[in-house]
Length: 280
Picture 1 (tube, helix red, strand yellow):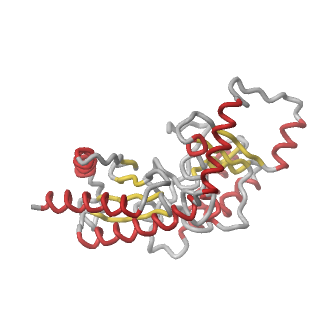
Picture 2 (cartoon, helix red, strand yellow):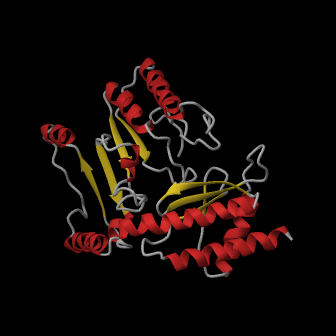
Picture 3 (cartoon, helix red, strand yellow):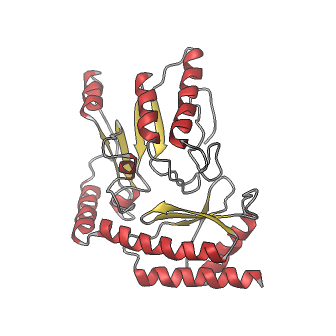
């Protein structure tokens, strides 16, 4: 994302390679203070705050899990400045994180965003997206007298697809499935971390997991070339992975929610074989 005077950015709440790491006594408060600093800086320049946008679990940033309590503190700073909190659930919503239906719920059951954007999963490949707001936001928009218009909004086929996907999520209990399979995947990946020093960190929830590859533990330098090599070799084994993060060194594990325990064993076995072979 390009920085501009109209859309300042706060530091990514990354506790592995960010400003405030796992050894910080309160990384949530520290990162939230950075948002407060950005807000204050904008206000000093005579600008107002409209909104704070964040993926509930930053994916492109490297499969990041923000420290618990971060979003509520950020929301307090943003709302005090007159803005709203927008949670992007496009990649992580609809039960993918297992423990909850929405990833923002990982920040506490009492935390409620002002606006939530949704897409991708709800269409299972079909192009459909939607947005939900609090009643306060909806009433404020209605009070402007502006009529909402969307060229493709309300398409009956897209609506039918979305409803069908929600039915499948419920009937096949895919949220609970994501929790079970994701926990098993995390367990096997942690075993790989103990075996292969190139794996610096494993983080995630449910079927949203990142494997951070490093050149050495001391500097945590991103192992970009090695990550590209792994992706290529896994593709030769008919397993599609991709990388994320500023260093393009974080392997993304975000499989379809029908991913099985057998699938987990197969994927991790191939990953182990490639990593073992590369060390020889």
